[in-house]
Image (cartoon, rainbow, N blue to C red; front, side, top):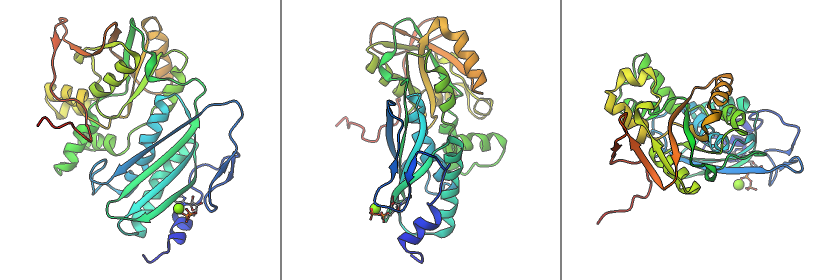
Length: 324
Ligand code: ADP
Ligand code: MG
């Protein structure tokens, strides 16, 4: 490494994000010191992204920086939390100044947008490029997974399946054209739904972010809430880029099972739908009812005529149970 570890931290990771009054000590001492407001609940989470597993090895550096924070912000959004601070742990095969500068720029862009300050971290050399971001914020009216009630409607923000097709296009080298661009952008730069979640915190009964595919994540919501979730695939919100780029069945499968959407799936009383949609519009996000919550367990898919449908593939699982 041409630069020492300390020079790298000083040059690329000092002063990232907004300067916040509640940060007493940021990067440079043995720990960060923050002054949380009394009486508020802290929401803490972290996610690790490994090159070749969570993002393509050839993903542009700035998108790796952006996405490593975005996936964490999506978890904060799913709790209707307000972002405050983050920590960053980096494992790098080598310290390439150009890569680091662009990575830090991508991270800083989203940290600024979210009003967060980078207060510390760690950096080490290792075989696979690995990025861990820890986030902390306030969750005063947390939207948990376990609050869905029979009779609720089930909703998702934005559109589903774009990132999954974006990944296929990126990996297949089909990166030209405006549809490919927008799908790949959804893969590299997901939009954490922080503002939407805060707007809906008082209306919704439960929420989860869709990171591993709608079917898999809706199943988590159903299990934690001890209810059944019924999804009507014909209602799934599909972007026009996805509809132009995939057959109808392929688009539906991607929307149900593809990963990396980072949209929110919310359960809220049906009679609040109008109010919820108006708040979503104000937050600049579409909100679509995709099904409902019933007594029972698990996730069921039904057709326009009410017949039960089956799908073989569920969301991504890092440690699938082998059948043998
Ligand atoms: P220690 O040896 O005490 O763990 P480090 O040398 O790892 O300290 O880090 C020195 C300071 O730099 C600490 O304040 C740490 O939080 C910060 N830091 C280290 N790596 C990063 C990083 N990638 N991003 C932000 N801050 C970092
Ligand atoms: Mg350290």
